[in-house]
Image (cartoon, rainbow, N blue to C red; front, side):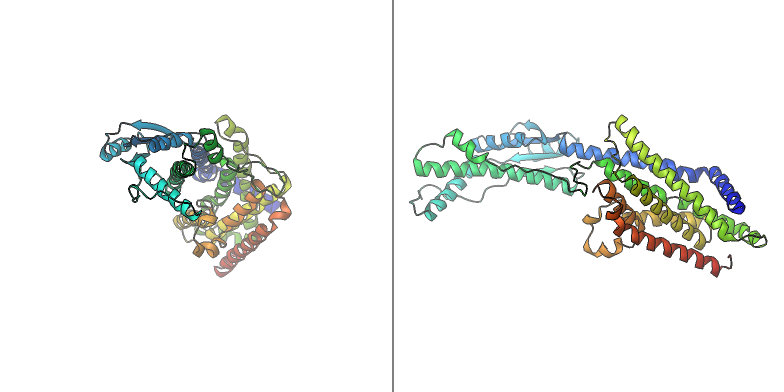
Length: 426
């Protein structure tokens, strides 16, 4: 016990002298957690609260185009800036490149006239299906000239598709109004009453959004709930920079050989490193969680809500920390130089984070990655944390995620021990 205590004190002393390692373990993850959460929260607010600047050029003077403009303004997500009809597509593009707006809509000439013809054609076909006589006189409807949607290249595909969907819905609403008016006039030979039109078109069934959670609560997850667990895991595994380098340094300066001449075993030193850095991972988690709980609200970001099962949260954090320590030791045992340990360790963590769902959500990955995802320990760590933070689960609900972590940790420990035996260090 005395040997273990002395070794732990030695490792703590070495750790406090490693300024770069401390920066990578504490400062960098905290900065990442704050910056990424702030950016993601701003994206959520852009979609939910703020309005997207939109340039609107209406080249038509008819009723249908005015209805379309009104419908676009009522969508609620756009800050519409109407332009004079004479503006060309080139002039609008120049304004967009100056970042006046990220998207622009151009309503073509004869939009209303073509819309009326199209509505009359559809209503005529409907009357024919009803067995009624339709008015076949007048010009034949031709394919309508499309509404032009210009977008800035920086606009992401998913956001662009959302805007396109909102625009399509507004156009469909205008089309439905025209068809309804034409059909009513053909049957009754008088204009559709405004009240009846509103009753028909605005009679929509509401949508109630409810997040599914195991504890029955209906709290809507925010950017903090997603990012704090993810970057806590990232911070834990980044101890590979300090711990891996420490093991390589001891191999190169002959510490292993000197230990073999003393009445002790390197396994004691290895256990000391595990306990020391396991304590570091727990401190990392506590610090980042505390920032999410108390500092984020002061910065205008949503605060972190801890799960109800605090004991389960501690156990998951402990297991994730142990897995991170085992990975760092494995890298340190097999690396030949400190540069190798730092380079391979840092790159492998970023790679495992990418395929594990920290950088890109796992559900958004292609099917070919479904098996590879399960090889990343960070994936199982993230799933365990999300089971507590987002799904409101308890320890028994996330055992299916903890067991693979145990298996990966055991494999890393055995691999590190086999590497030490092969090099005759234990």
